[in-house]
Length: 460
Image 1 (tube, rainbow, N blue to C red):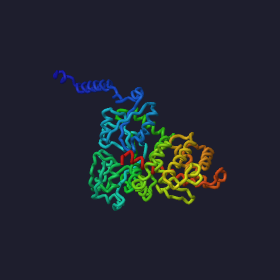
Image 2 (image 1 turned 90 degrees about the vertical axis):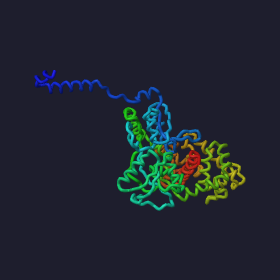
Image 3 (image 1 turned 90 degrees about the horizontal axis):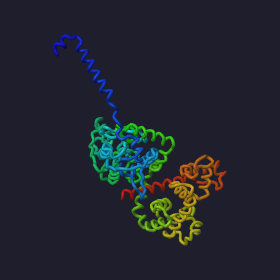
Image 4 (image 1 turned 60 degrees about the vertical axis):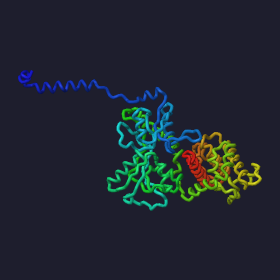
């Protein structure tokens, strides 16, 4: 054998040629790796499974109704595919990733920017821009620059993207101490800051700004790092599913559905008044308990969530049964003399009579707007309670003229303030209207209502 090789001067080239041929045959015979969970399988099975976490930003249940920003987006995605949505819950990103890699779900939707240190996962295009913020207690010394974080102790949740950001700060010379809390969410840590149990945490802006209303003593301090996008995650070998997710987000941003879902949870997060909110929280502990039984009874009779009625009463009178407005509206729900008389009220200062009459009147208004759906119907009724049916009618007519939907609060929140201008109120049947005040009235009730719902959800 070796003698033949020595006699053949071309043997090195022959060997290389044979090697190339063998490699080519092996390469051509290999098939592309199949998609781990083919999109066709999801469509054929008729269902898709979301992996997420149980909190006020992702997924929760309130009054036997499933909701949450990520849940609503995922439900919209399932509808987009024409399939049913299933949900699997995990405590943190590490657990969610494990479920994904073990094919217990098809995608992760959990208000995350990335999955630190994870292989085998692909992230979608970004669907919402956020930023990380330092959170401190109102009584703490203000942190005016990143350099002031040196030597500080910052508490973060386990397996979050905040760990990476703090590592970047450390690399840039900002030495600080990190304490990782395995079973603590961003919400939990913000609450602990507000209560003075820890000094500092870090949170995404959407979480931070929403939590201010729940915990007014928590301050959203300086931003850290660059702005980032929230993303969904799939297994790396699921390109068709990933493409479908990206197409979905592009579609709902164009048709307005993303904005609708966003506004459902985050529309008023920029609105913050520490004095008002702190006063409200104190009233929930001191004043509300005196009248809660009456409120619950009246709300049940007329089929409203009692927390909504409590929120409206606070906006009307701050739970003061002797309240009297400049226009002589009286009592807890600020009944006018005409309304009180029509509802058989003999003493507007009597909390029980006033509350029952006010809720009955709200129900009457609610029933009038039967063409509107869900929350829009409620907001139209509240607007009519505040400013009168006539002005709401004018605002709806103006909405029609502007090719806006008169049954949507998003339309009337634009047209009601327009009725302050002579150009519009001169043509309106019921004339001038302080519509901006009504828009603010609804906004405040929504915030107060959300705080009460949050207490129920978190069992505070």
